Image 1 (cartoon, rainbow, N blue to C red):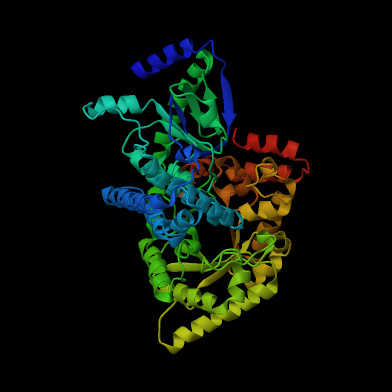
Image 2: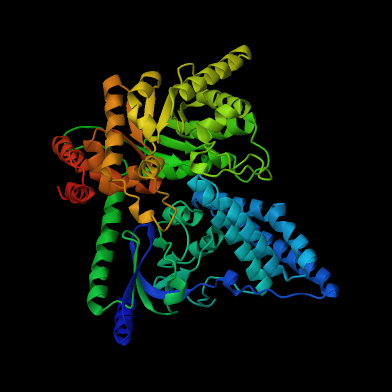
Length: 602
């Protein structure tokens, strides 16, 4: 209570100052109340200056030493991870180590120093800007947001060059652990950006939350925040400029709102909300082993989305009953050569075995023409969202596709694997895919390599053309999976990463709901299962609507499984069906949103 009492006193002292709120993207739910600690942003401190020729060699040595120092820091971090640390942490460190070792960051800046006779900080920042520009042209949102990893790696190097200390605020080495935890539990980190590596260090502390100026819902920092269950908000734009060190702030990760210098009344209200949130989170853990069944007996399958084998622990901890989406792009990232069949096979096999015959749906490679297997190869595309990507790329590169299909088939012998094909838009693409799958099967039979002869083949419905023609696809597939992220983007002609139009990105748009409904009905008519694996599946506010529309399978980030399950357990199918029909009968978004809000009141 002493911390809360101190916060009230601080709030009263700041009452003369104006209170204001900021809005960003809430990437990890929860409420935190604490004092701001501004984290250094070395990138903003970089200046450009010329060096005389006789100092160039010294500058090159300084840069090389900085790279070695950061590499050592990351290696120490990796070695310090505990056995029960979230699986994402090791993957993030490995990614940053690979980026640091890449010639584009470790050697190209040396050429810039020699050519332009400039300081090391400026050289690596110039190279970073060039790399980030290339990433921003990538259509795939997950891969595009890897630019934040590049920035975070460069940030670490620049901090070493500038002689910055660790970002974590120093609480004193001699403090008792309990006292230290109490102090840190009232600290909210405010940064331009926070790298996963820095967040790993923060995990050893007990900070209340963190907020950043930049980042996206699928950035590594966002993913890490969810895995650590830290209330967090990104994309606040100017939080670090507008918030002063030590100011009292409230972070509402659920709503994506930050309140600076709250009044006594607002502070009291959020203290109550914070307690209620903590109680609800404890209650959710009680239903981990409870089957997801509605009040009137309708079973709902709740699956999890993963990026690699290391995510399986989080899936099991969530109580999910399978994997609805395994993004295989993870295996291809940060590599100059495509992973061979054996490497892919081992990764898929590991997941299949770990899930013990629970379903594992693995999506085939979903990269675009702008992201080549060899990062040194550049293929310009005027509009990568409409270019050579996903199944189009796989069909254009049949040998790459053949290798992956063989690896998937081989792994199917060790578990319940299903294959999912992304971005289908024509039946011709589907039929070519099926032909290549049969060729892969034939090649394995000739070599007497076992696989599941009846492996299920599904297609992602994420292009409006596929949704409209869903019945035709359902006739030739074993199951359908709706990728709502792209379906919404293509239907509404909105790039949700573009700040200028992001507010128009709405999953409840009547056209989006109708396309989802068409797909569900196609599956029902032909007896084929239909699932949703996009962000809509993990939004508990939309659970009852999706179930009422006829969905029985939802796949989401593991951290969302319990909150969605709670909605399922409190649902009554007869009412949901009626309510969903009402929603689908409307063509006005302003009428749909209030109706959906009422779903969660019953």
